[in-house]
Image (tube, rainbow, N blue to C red; front, side, top):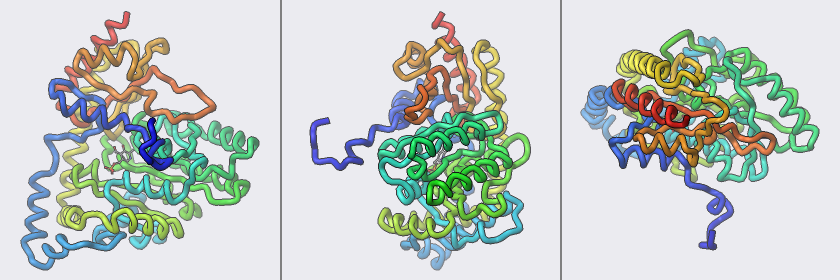
Length: 421
Ligand SMILES: Cc1ncc(COP(=O)(O)O)c(C=O)c1O
């Protein structure tokens, strides 16, 4: 690029592919987007938000507090409610890991992911990520010049044998001191739909403990629990915060974007000291606090019970939509494989090896010509020098589109696949 006086970070930062996918979906209403991670549109909690806002703004005291700047860490009530919620999901009796003092409210959990990566990593450092992983997080790494090593996934989460092999390899080649964290989207993963079992979290933390001694500094497990609340089958799995003796190495990122008012973008992180203080300082520089009004909205909706009621309906809605997508896929892509998600918003389909699905592939072009979008699987793989990126997979979201459009979208995709011969 011709020099326009940009910083190294500015020069490195590429346009996130998600922006193009979302813009295409919004600009061309006849395109069915099974790509963007939008949440269900029809069930967004408009009435619940109106009720909460009228309570907040109906009284001068709470109205003024909501319309004033708040603290950098965020609204105390919502911090307490959020910490208590994670604690109750974990059925935890121990207090320290779930203290509201360790919780910072952010503008989406995306901001938390960004800040904690800035707090822990320098250019040239290495982050261990799942193969595949959340591609917007991979963008943060790329933009900061942070390297990545991919750890394959099994049906119950990270492949620990591979994790150990990767750690051993970086130890042998001398780059272990550059490994700072392991990033895991542990519930109904974006993009694969996989949930990581509690034993796997324990096993990963044990390995990190062993290798951090050799690295000479802590190696954190960043648990991104964005989809935890969108469970529609099976039991909840405890978070890594519940692993005895390891809470000082676990950073937990949560969000209200998926379970409640998506556009409010209220997220949070539970962080051990001293990372919490450093992230707070960084947030002080970013924006010295996320919007008060939106934090009041969430606190009021949780306290009134509206949040829990809404969540129960939402889970049912996604359970139905996942079923519709499954039935349509069975008909339209008989030669593909996929895992049945038990929550979240995504199916991950694996096509026959020879069928490339990338943005420049014939399949992607045929799908677009047939007015349907998917996320090419290769976007979800980090730039790992050790392995090539698989390019015959796709992420399909049942979040934003109606049941009818999910059916049509999968049919259109099936036609595009069929035209590949
Ligand atoms: C895995 C994962 N983490 C974090 C986020 C960020 O969401 P938000 O910033 O709205 O909390 C997303 C959004 O799609 C996601 O899929």
